[in-house]
Amino acid sequence: MATRIAGLCAAVLILFAPIFSPAITRAEEPGRQNLDNGIVKVKSAYTFSETIDRIKQDVASKGIMFFFSVDQSKLAGDAGIKLRPSTLLVFGNPPLGSQFMTSNPISGIDWPVRLLVLQDEDGTVWAAYNDFNYIARRHGIKDRDAAFQKASEVIGSITSSIVR
Image (cartoon, rainbow, N blue to C red):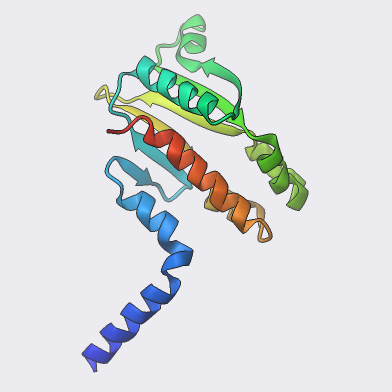
């Protein structure tokens, strides 16, 4: 009986692996954490400034529009608040991102892409972003699977530029 159940479970996993494999693969990559709140964290192998430079270079090399960055630690410092290094990068591909908004205009709250580069209390540098499958579920978008898959692949490629 246990052998039949194990075999059935294996068959189900094989059958549904194409649906779940992007999330499984990302979660298994060293230094990548998928959090329950839809945030993906990627551990950088570089300094804070090198991480930002590498991400910006990779975005540019892909022909993706870089809109702006927000140095959150500088803004906090200007307000008299000490904050570890934290910079928000905003970029996107309007022909891709706009597709999501045609399915649900309120999803524009999540576009363009925002990627946060931060340094934790141990000095480790991370890049964090919203998981695109989570965004799809959040906005009930069910007619853009290929576009969400493409967005996931692109952000995965961009963040791979900061790992060794």
